[in-house]
Length: 432
Image (cartoon, rainbow, N blue to C red; front, side, top):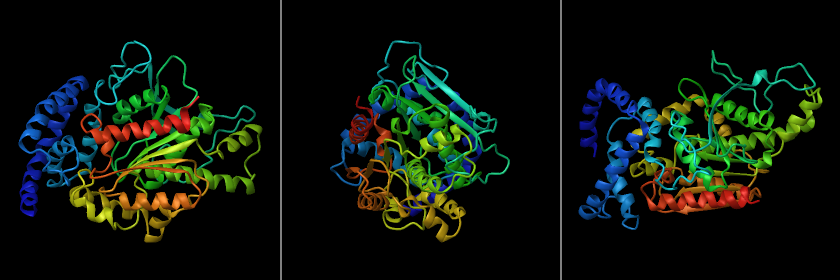
């Protein structure tokens, strides 16, 4: 393997010259055509792999033939050096794997013209959100809105009060409940648009519930605290501007987005304690009402393989990169040094969601594989949360890689996990 990696490193230098034009060319191909190419390629490739290699390429023969076929494709990524540009490009291509008939199949509420300009979605409205929270003023005060959950944002030259992302609405009227969806990408990559297709389908599965996918700032251009600020501000947008009761909000986080979900919940519980002893700055009826609403925790949260430990890598996060298809050795080598930018070892420990208090959190649904990199930290999170009195539902799979549910178009284990998460949301949050 080491010889192969050295050879691939030589190819890497050649790719550096041609990859940007090639990636740009691919991105200029229409999404529908990219989806068709992906669909046809899989339909041709999978039967050949099943016949020739069967279940011999994954980490265990008990994994599905589809997962073994996926392993043979994705495995080669560990041999090539990873760059942030490549990570961001790869995650931007998620919609290519979620065409309308891919699992879960798109089931629009009514026949309508597709939003072809935004990933070809079936939803009635897909709104691009760009809202300046500083323009939101209380009805009984002339003061501009000030963030309440978090005030720390360190990125220079940025407007801290802007909420941006996408809002998916399945019918002419907004749903009474909403999912706040946070994408993953190790804080280095990911964006709201690439998550539109899968999140739309999950919303359809959950009684056609609207989805809000905010963007948050990424490393290395910004800091972890900027990402947390953006997420808290997006939540305040739903409560203060969109007027959602927190009990009608469900959080959904993928990988690093799952960690941010837990930190958001912890921040809300912390705010409960702070507001009871601090009334300074709350000098209008609307301020009091908004602060009161922001003290209420959401109805629950789904955490897909959440990344919740920012300390020095250990256990499964260190050892399982050898076989994890997503957080492989190349991704590990590129990504982990950036987490030292969080600060000292003490700061990294204190900011890790798994080491902070979990008391007062709403019901959680955690989905993880026993053979992926974040297994140990997820098991610790589940056990600590249960000890703190949190209702935790654990979905545990074997032999799968990190965030395998994202491959629901190809892998049966991924489809099972998608059903597990959507069923939990329907029972916990969306039953009428």
